[in-house]
Image (tube, rainbow, N blue to C red; front, top):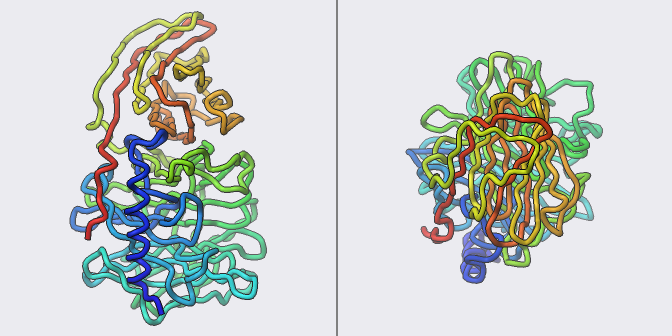
Amino acid sequence: MIDHQQRIEKANQAIQRAKKKIVNTKHRQKYHFMPPANWMNDPNGLIQYNGIYHLFYQHNPYDATWGSMHWGHAVSKDFLNWKHLPIALAPSEPYDDDPEGGCFSGTAIVNDNKMHLFYTGTIIKNGKMIQTQCLATSTDFVHFEKHPKNPIIELDVEGADSSNFRDPKVWFAEETGEYYMIVGTSINGKGNVLLYKSMDLLEWECLGPLVDYDENLGSMWECPDIFSLEDKYILLFSPMHLDEKTTLYMTGEMDYQSGKFIYDKIGQIDYGFDFYAPQTLLDENGRRLMIGWQNGWEWMPWWQGFGPTSEEGWCGSMSIPRELQLDENGYLTFTPIKELSELGNNLITQVNRKISNEKVKLAENLPPNFEAHFEFDCLKNPVKIIIENHQGNSLVLKLSKESLEFDRSKADSYHSGSCTMPINTNNKGIKIFADTSSIEIFSLDGYSVLTSNVYFETGKRNILISCREEVELTKFRVDELKLNLEVGELDG
């Protein structure tokens, strides 16, 4: 019988062979986290311990398409420069060993000098998907052993289905001195999370559905996350089949006595095509940091495939890290982490430039990996920002004080359509993070973000701007951003 460690060694060997073929391929990113080779989706187990950030992620080490899920693993000292470590989890047991299942998403926590990975074991049995919650531990934080009592939780809740019972999030509550876990689920066709509690991380008591609500919030809540921020609790989740909404948050109160989360605000985390399954951590500087997977699934209304990168031997990247803060009204704001500014090599800086109705070329012959900052005196008159390459592909951004319309229909041959990001009326600009095959746009007020994959042809970029009536561009700055992302080895 093949054991877990043998499966991991086999997966590591496959990655070592595959990664030799993809260095400097056409669409590899310059400063976004990617797998060393083959497929990646959801971030898992984000944690910082003793100054080291750990990122685990859903991973198929054998192909650049989705397949039996493993957990990839990387570490960093700054949440930007990553070193790849050996595979942390591989399907190997009756509860997780299936080509259509595997080790699905979950959480990492440290207790008694051990790192605990909680994950969803997924198999197909008699034509039905069975999902259970499982545990693996490590003393060196690199090599993990699955617990002999797995699965530690099996579904036994009326109205819930074992095919929609996944992605455990575990935390310790100082208020009660106990551990808690939420697991994404669907109850009678409505998305929710189930709440469990434990004293020892092995024996878990189900307290029932966490949230009572009446509105339409999707058929299933994937990859939930919960944490406290300021004086509120925040619940994040990715709802399935909720029109164009793929990532939501609720702010409210956590009542541990009743086992209920009572929310008072609902907001959207990202307004783009390609941001899903975000997960957060609290770092040692007290910051709540978040990243998400930059892609989507077949059931999303705009989905047109995973793009061309699988032909290069890889698929999937993570968003840039974002810091979450809560405003005085209970809404989240999202800002790129400050460490990104330390990467910048300034290419252009302009101030106090008036833009009239002609099309103005603000920058030309830029590398594909840049940050562009646009700040206006007033956006009472809409402007159009165009990012184009030398082959004639273009992204069109129509920016007003109320919204940003994002059109990628002429950017590549893989996508069509547009989407809209609302903007607060006090907004005065945007910040664009462009990379080889993705773009992330932040409103300067921090309330809105839009993430999308864009598969431009290779080559230099130009930035143009135009408007119908005169506006003043008070600040325009472009910085090249670059990390050495291909040097990390499978150490350990």
